[in-house]
Amino acid sequence: MQLIDGKAVADRIKQEIAQEVETICNAGGKRPHLAAVLVGHDGGSETYVAHKVKACEQCGFKSTLVRYESDVTEDELLRKVDELNNDPDIDGFIVQLPLPKHISEQKVIEAIDYRKDVDGFHPVNVGRMSIGLPCFVSATPAGIMELLARYEIETKGKHCVVLGRSNIVGKPVATLMMQKAYPGNATVTVCHSATPNIKEICRTADIIIAALGSPEFVTADMVKEGAVIIDVGTTRVPDASKKSGFKLTGDVKFDEVAPRCSFITPVPGGVGPMTIVSLMRNTLLAGKKAIYR
Amino acid sequence: MQLIDGKAVADRIKQEIAQEVETICNAGGKRPHLAAVLVGHDGGSETYVAHKVKACEQCGFKSTLVRYESDVTEDELLRKVDELNNDPDIDGFIVQLPLPKHISEQKVIEAIDYRKDVDGFHPVNVGRMSIGLPCFVSATPAGIMELLARYEIETKGKHCVVLGRSNIVGKPVATLMMQKAYPGNATVTVCHSATPNIKEICRTADIIIAALGSPEFVTADMVKEGAVIIDVGTTRVPDASKKSGFKLTGDVKFDEVAPRCSFITPVPGGVGPMTIVSLMRNTLLAGKKAIYR
Image (cartoon, each protein chain N blue to C red):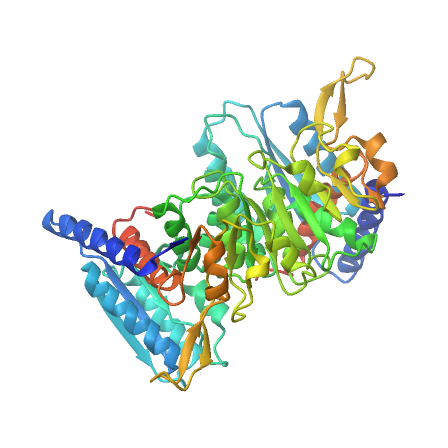
């Protein structure tokens, strides 16, 4: 069994990006600039955004954090989106989700210029990804593909079972895994809450991508000997022994599943660190205008 | 075994649309107007466009056919797209594919205002469909869903195997079949040219949607007793006994597969007639501004 060290890969990629940024800047090019809009004080969102700002520093990017209290109006937020769309110094920006209930997330996402949508949530980027055109691929699916590639995991003709059909993980990663490319070219099955025989289907999988958000759902009896396990789950499970009061728990019962696998991602330290790095890579692509314009 | 009569369903839907159009017009509303752009004289394209124009008449739509010789330049075609985008009388339009090699199909598709893209090929519509937002769903996947619905075929929790991963059928129909809706909510497996064990996977399917374009690929030994078979294949196979010189052949070996099925679509007369009706329905939606604006 080989542990997929997402943190190590993420660190390496950040170094690669930082080197490229220095090369660009030394040649008189523009330093990539990411803006993040954070509404309110949700603990998870604060942490994510802080990690993103820190990753920008590590990559040599300029970063701007725009903060609003949770009573900001939708109009005010949309005006800021418009301002960022039109700010030539901003290469890409994100609006950290979730947003307060009185603001339509979909409206905000669609208001972002797709050419600056480094989160890859705008319908134009989702659609282009589905068709197989150059685009900003959203962070988690892109991070998973990168891990498979860095560990040179064979995917062609393999049976990849995706657990979960969310818009941000299950559906896009299924699309990427079926496309005629590496990583990809796999036979893909998507299971979800309405699938009656998930255990049975998982047992036929060469690769399982678990993105249900259901702690320790995947148990040893569901995993074929030698399977590859990508665990996207990150549920906060109460844990009095931790300073934070919770433990990040994956969708896979790691201790019993790991011995059966050829490759497995841990939680934390697997897919998680890769998502931020995917955002950094998209920001670099935006800065280089490598995809649009 | 019940034959799914796509032609009969299509005729019924055209009548339903025609009735709604009359109600709209009687109330002083605008008659839906579809334009079709046809480049060159490809036999298949001529036939499809003629069918579409005829279907417009049956639905009570206004239709406009714009013809170009195959030496039209990309610029000229893009100017026409722009003109149709800005023509307030045109509710929706299509550019019949394929286009001559010197014209970029993708560029033309993306030039179409997504609010008039009744073929549903623009990235905005593809992306919105993937996310599950209101949009123009492309004709073949929409037609398949409509057939499943009209025959009240159970899909929730069923294993749906999609053969083929094309942008216009395989990928979108897989996305629709997995969404939490009826028809849909199925466990979906997408197989393709790199799948080593298609036969074995098909034998586990409750529903097979065959869209490989490989004549008579699906044989009786691949089909579970009681399965539902949707045959999207329409390959022209030479046949001297036909006036046209060819026979439209599906992806399913109908004679041997049909006796095993609970439901099956014939070719021709199954999915085919539904695709044009889906285009009509999108045009009606465009005319009513039911999705955009």
